[in-house]
Amino acid sequence: MTAPAPSSPAPKHIISTKPRRSGETYAISAEIKGNRDTYVISTGAKRSGETPVFRSQRPDHRSPDTPSQTQATTNRVPHPLRAFCAKGGMVAALLAISLTLPAAAQKAPAQNSPARFNGQAAYNLTRQYIAAAPKRWVGSPGHAKAEAFIKDHFKPEIAQGRFETDRFTAGTPAGLLEMRNYIVRYPGKKDGVIVLATHYETNYPLRDINFVGANDGGSTTALLIEMGNYLRAHPPQGYSIWLVFDDGEEAIQSWSATDSLYGTRHLAAKWSQDGTLKKIKAFLLADMIGDKDLNIDRDANSTPWLLDMLKQAAKNTGHSAYVFKNSTAVEDDHLPFAKRGVPVLDIIDIDYGPRTFSMPDGYHHTAEDTLDKISAHSLQIAGDLFLEMIRLINQRG
Image (cartoon, helix red, strand yellow):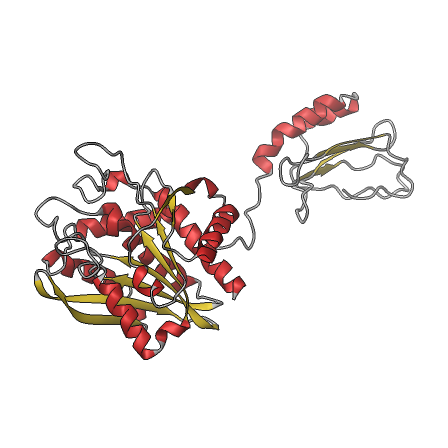
């Protein structure tokens, strides 16, 4: 409010309401100034850094020798309100002012808010992915379509030479099968690498049923594709981030040490030989975390300090209710790296759907693993946790 002129009488009344907590309620202030017929009413948004959004001043009715105050033109107080004030109806005046605030005083958008992962976009990508390649077991036409889908979403990285196709031939119970891992690199500013990984194919033994793996392989492939969109717009400021889409996680015949984890066993051995493994600060695996009823397990096969860090990441992001209700020990794509001394973390919800006599493992590895069983909300939580883990690992290093 403009300060009164030196010749003006001291204020008779100053009434002010302030927010109970910063940013909660807009304040209203009113002043009656001057002689019998001179009044000034003013309201303002009293939050730090904001300009008052509503103000009106009447000219002083002074003697001709005294210059009048400049009349403000922003949102003049309605004439009936001035009449209320002239009659001393301060409560009525403040009520009338407060009723005008919602239309005039909109909360300003947050400035410099941190960028967030987009869970809805990841969900949409899941839908598109399983529609394009619903049955993507190794060697199938759907598997080729899945690979084309992944590559299509990393055209900028392919053009920049930051997309690698890691081809290899695996000996399996079904014979020699050609498989491919895909590695997408986002260079950082520190020496070291954080790997985010998922498998992208579906279960080979289930190739003859309508198994689309919406959660198992589908949701996490979409999660990493959307993570690529995020990293493209917000390049790493710490360690480099590598996205790994690994092939052949599922058994070809029956799960065993030699019939499973084909892609990560190959990649861990390759990186061990060429020295890449020494650069990896953490290997973070995403598996089955699109589940609507999300609860990320505490995996005994993961590195203890990364488990502690995940708990902290959940606290920091407000997602503590979604982690560590259950403990388990999962054989998954992190094991080949753990065996070579790399810090690993399996972010997985293995408890997927109700367990019944006909489905003892819930929806896992059944035709019920469909899009309606996952949610954008769960993918948002997963994305938030991965980004916070990246931040905390950089902070630790």
